[in-house]
Length: 343
Image (cartoon, rainbow, N blue to C red):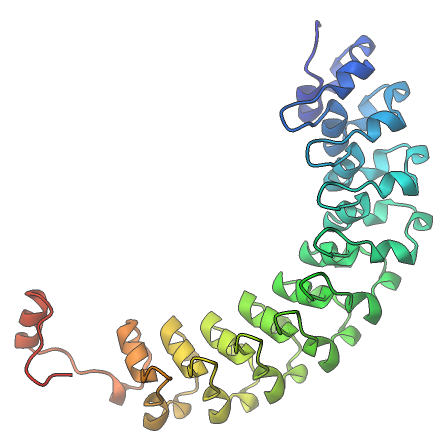
């Protein structure tokens, strides 16, 4: 076969079909439009065992593509670090950084393949390595749902409290991405959930904004945690009302004063629920006339918000607008005219 496409063969898993003469250093290091080589493709797709052992060298495993990733990064992404000959798994090679500051350790953590590295290559300081945005190895694992594949002794209160450049702890990252259930229960405390990012968001904010409030143990909810305000005046209870998670809050805490908490615009969680169509998550006995008449700083009531947004059917029956009469329907059809003195 003349000039075989090694990258295509590596991606297709057909490297074994090629003659030994095809595997030259020049062919293995030839780059495509993204700067990837056949070594990158083989490493990512589990094809390193299909290469003649003599052609797997430190030099070829350290080639960087246009984004700065080496074949070792790609082996980590594909979950094939265990195919790399042990002699090439050195601390120096694993510390190779991409353009964005991702080491092979970060890529392995993000893709659940840290466990493929020998324990002696995973000392505590590895978990303090940072990307360009300040993410630790554990931030990457938390974001991608791979914390449960990190050695338990590496998951501590200190490592979970590590902050990236935005002030997000590993627990914030897990909450935002729906992976709080991978964090040991003893590390989910009132203190760890109250830690704030640079913008003032707690873990409750992160979980409520992203729709994962149900992953926080019920006993950790408290009035103060739900009304904690970020720098923009946003609270977890507003986020919960907006994202439809009021039913995730323990009923004993879902009180009138909580639902009347104001943000910087004067909106209450009732306004947020009315706007997003989640008034049906609020116990009917809390939807009284005076609460539905509560106005924000623009003088808009909860009642009017629900009607304007098309969610009048979620209001208690006595507060729903009456069906339009024939004349009002006719005027609406011809241009939205109003009857004299109509509201």
